[in-house]
Image 1 (tube, one colour):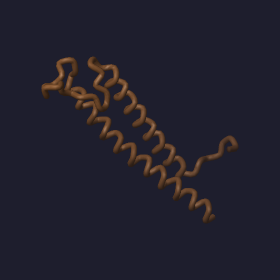
Image 2 (cartoon, one colour; image 1 turned 120 degrees about the horizontal axis):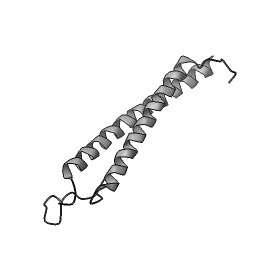
Image 3 (cartoon, helix red, strand yellow; image 1 turned 120 degrees about the vertical axis):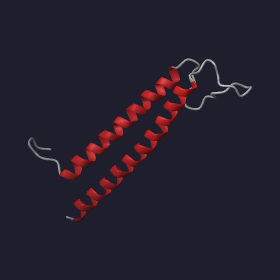
Image 4 (cartoon, one colour; image 1 turned 180 degrees about the horizontal axis):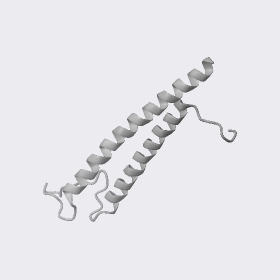
Length: 99
């Protein structure tokens, strides 16, 4: 693009939405890393109870559940943000095609 050229407002909005999605991805990655590095290494799917059904003593069950819940919410938000970006790109390209 030539210097000083302005992006169409539709693209500016799309780039902002894409940046939001990237920020969500970074937050998800940070939470996943935290879960993987916690004592007991519970991760996203590791058991929080022992073989007898009692909470594991080597895992902070409450914190793990909070992080897992936050990841699930962020994944939903990310999916919605990417759907908006996809629809916006489709609409933008359709408008360019129609010109």
